Image (cartoon, rainbow, N blue to C red):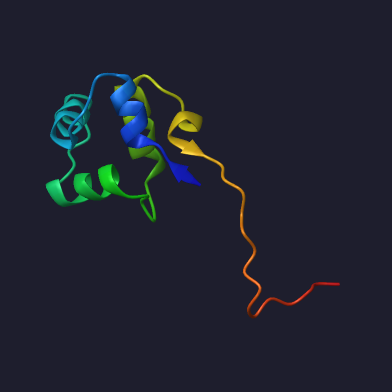
Length: 83
């Protein structure tokens, strides 16, 4: 999955993580500076669905705008065929 938070935010005129952090707080999601940095700069390993819902509400977007499927590249090492 590709995490498009920065693109979606930029399309709404939000250019800095601190701006989004304030917007999320206005919608009831208080995010620490460290967590906000991770959300802003890389794909999160995990994210609560309730947090994702607030992010979408704050940005006026859909989950599919933030999470975009990418082709999966199979790892050849250690794979077994299932029959």
